Length: 215
Image (cartoon, rainbow, N blue to C red; front, side):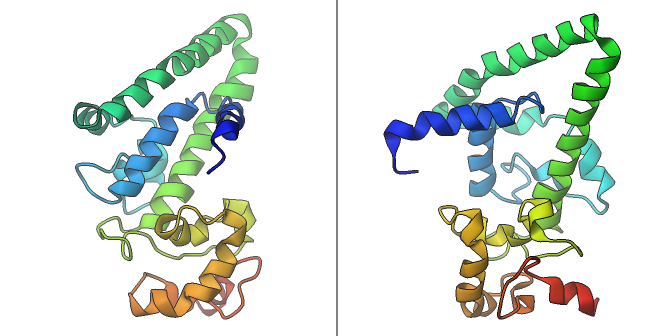
């Protein structure tokens, strides 16, 4: 965050974690910031193609890259374009590496890298983009993201049930989001944040488990 001299650690850890997905940390960082700035905007949200009625639609859509929106941002924002260009060599290197692995070890690469990466990207798009922003039509800080739940601890879906807090206050770490939910509940209810009325007084393993029991 504020420690500039240690920022390289963020890049290294982030890029290592993305090797399996064959993605560039620099590019995803840039597109993620655009998603925050233009959530649910049909022309500017880089994740807008996740909007759908059924979960399998975003699970498939993530594999069709939205180059139109990316190109639009690159033309409007030189810094965004620079970030995309900086991340391109890593993205190409990973693609080339996978191609070589396919030639040398086709079955192993299919089962250990290619297929898991496709499943992983689909999982991310469903739980990180589609669920938190359904139905994907609302815009504005207090309307574009919702609280939701599944009958499982929040850690199993990377706390995406509390994604509202991340959008409202990105500087709050994920591990502090339950405390923020408890403290900000009246504030969010007053502003009509979707699902805020269902937040329990005490947030535990599943922040909205009471909703699951009542459904």
